Length: 313
Ligand code: GRG
View (cartoon, rainbow, N blue to C red):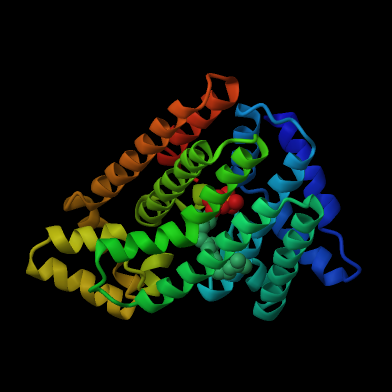
């Protein structure tokens, strides 16, 4: 993928440019920090697995990375995060207003690029996906500090805010590859399951990960009172006192109790159960790939299922 990803990076850098210096400064600040570029890889791999080699694939891969980057800029403002991709967040460096507005620039640039690709189906998929992502963030906001949400409520949030863009990326690759609707849906299903696994692991790494490897602060979810699966499961599995500890931490965002909570999510097996849920999603994603012909691209998609679950960053 290395040379293909270099082509995507070239499009990203070319299309980032603006007449407004601050936009160039902030957008290149976040883009040059890297990132795993998983979503553009999905576009390329599904297109390749289905025999599509046209140049639009690089444009579309860059488009999904722009949308992803816009959501990160906005998300770090909403979450008041200070560390992303191993450096100070853009909001910490340049302020909230500039960060949100440059996120708007990237988001609208992505739509300009989509229009130039001129494929109505792609526009349809991405317009729908970005709308659902925004809904996911609002649902998450509503759930904040609420210890009574269900596992289903939690799953809905992560399917919307994270899995939807994975799903859309996979679907676009399939659309480029000329897949008929049933196959396109199967590819989308892979993306949705992979994205769900990815976010489940993201949520467990917030308790067991290392900031230096993750490139962001651990414990941020607790500080915000975000009721993620490790906490919901610890409440289900713990005794009354332990349940109260987690409830109070969610309701008041008690990050100073992080060490106690980490011990609890480990002792109750909540972290392991979260990892098992991610494994189940990844296995579902793997099964979706049976619909594709054998190829190096399909193999790479299989490997992504392993990496989504067994990762430290
Ligand atoms: C601009 C459409 C739009 C919506 C704004 C704030 C917001 C609404 C959405 C935020 C959604 C979000 C950030 C979900 C979390 C997704 C996630 C797991 C991000 C981290 O992805 P990685 O690990 O990041 O792929 P890298 O740094 O590797 O690119």
